[in-house]
Length: 259
Image (cartoon, rainbow, N blue to C red; front, side):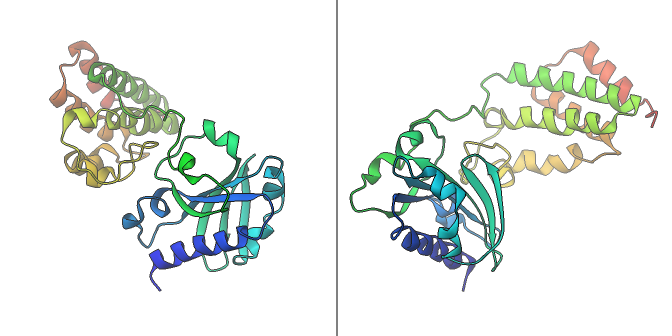
């Protein structure tokens, strides 16, 4: 059986178990098992919400027998007050959260698909999040470029001091995250399942030009100066940058680490 069939069947099976559980109102598939089933591949997993009646939330959190009835669990980790990360015995991984109907008003999610619902439940109200999504894109190239420049400068200083872990975060995480937030201003975006929660998702398909440069921008723990040089070169290509700061960054690139 294909992975896609296994995942969708497992969700259907969870729905059938919930059908016989008092207080269960609906099962909502999200992400690739929500409205984007066309992108399911061999590395996809289960992401879902269970909506329950008022007063039943804690029962479904404290006792996950309803999942064990679906298929034996090999692993379960309560990663937050309202949900778990799990793995079934057959290696299907998943993450889920439990909501009372009123709480769904404040939840942020996208691509919801009703897998199962109680006959009395109004499903239309939960297909889309009513809450604003966290901002993942920036409209200010000036802000992002200058923030990235300062990330490079601070990161290289820490690298020279021997603080390589802090350095790699400033250069290969903070600066790159900023650039991801403005890629839509720099090159045409291929419409390939953008994620409202993370610009890094499927960036290789969505922004192929930038993706072709990332290998040199992300050279790792011992090559932060080399990564910084490639990022700086890119910044110079896309925006006018401050000559003094650029000069200081290039000076730091040549400084040997104390570690």
